[in-house]
Length: 146
Image (tube, rainbow, N blue to C red; front, side, top):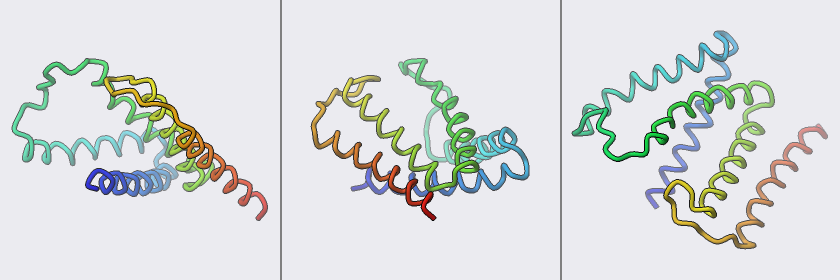
């Protein structure tokens, strides 16, 4: 239950962040906004890190070095989703992003990539993904009718 609650909070924060980013970007530009957002994130997370964690910031241990590039993905996430929200609106952009996340996560789970245990493909999972994609298409069709 805790994991689901954290995921819900994350989804709310991602949606709000992208809407706020799109509004800031209208005044400052997309790259300035991306830099500002990630810079503020660093400034906010460092004090929390040093007060909560009892280890060095650079103690990576035996982490695969490729995983350290996750922060680079953050730049793409902020920039591309912010631009998507500006161009096609928050509900549609975030819905499409959610579907792409689910498809990639499904592929990673099924293939067992990045150290995750592989899981089987089931017709229930495929129907679920199909319904999500169908829901976004129906949402977009409804918007065109208006």
